Length: 416
Image 1 (cartoon, rainbow, N blue to C red):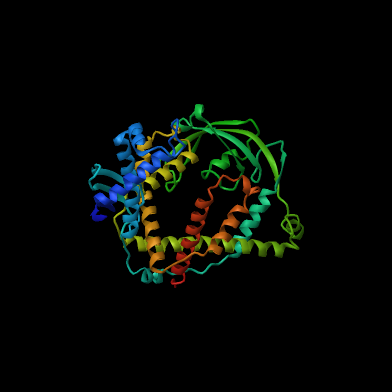
Image 2 (cartoon, helix red, strand yellow; image 1 turned 135 degrees about the vertical axis):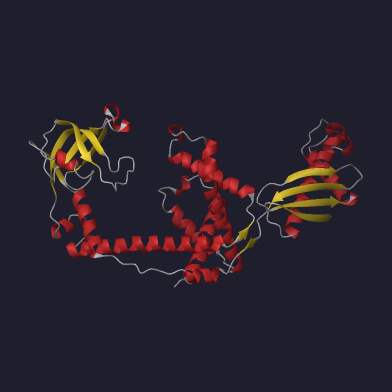
């Protein structure tokens, strides 16, 4: 078998493969055996039909096509293995020459894993600085207040709304078409906590349930985040639908004990501190990893294969469709795919960069590590036997997860 390999653009290779007459004759013999093995004719046992009758039944062209298929599959696979080629898609095959008693020649074009030229990734990782994780007392107090608010008691209140009451309102504005009377907005909040534009809540204070105020003029601050109304004098129609009195539990030892297995308030605060620390630590780790990978990828040279980018683009597109109803937007499928193309390209590039670092550093994953990770995943399901997961796909997935984690840990250990 003769193989000639040509490099094409976008990480494609062209394999021109030719089998000698003798090599192809062997595949013709295999074709007769394969076709005859399943053939059943009266007077002959299954698989024992003579060659001439097989030929008359399926025709010489049928045998030739079968021989060609067998030859292409086997010789292509052999050429790929012998030349250390990593295909990432099904090859596009064209038969150039095929006939009984002659050599077989065919051409196969296939996308392959691209060559990745990395910068000095260790130097880049070393240049990234780690921040110290700290939890401030005010953060613990803020969490305590959030828990306190979540356990507040509400009761109906007669009389005007005052600061500290829970109010439900409806508002509109003729100055803003998007919230005119037809499109009036509803909201609910604790009065006096700065939920709305400065001055807006002052207008609600003193109102009684079902009371309305028409065209109340409010000066919007010039630095307001909503640029459309910043610095303007806007008229609002406000209706107070209901008022409720709010009672918050006192934050003390009894409060802490009521939340779970806590001895006292100090025990609860320590638990909150530990939880906040872990959250910050996890967020910082992800930030560092992203920074390292982005900096390495930025200086890496890769001819991204279209097939990988398109697959990732399609994956992102389907994920977006699951999360939001695209029918409610004016963006077409094609426009959306175009918008997410840069993200798909970045994800593919990052994957290839990590993969190359893993190859250079000889990062391996043991069978035991895979088994433990698979058990962790399956333990999250009540009945793992009912999960529709392909065992081999799960195995490949867990291997990639562990391998990626090891690569990131290697890079993180280099940071300052």
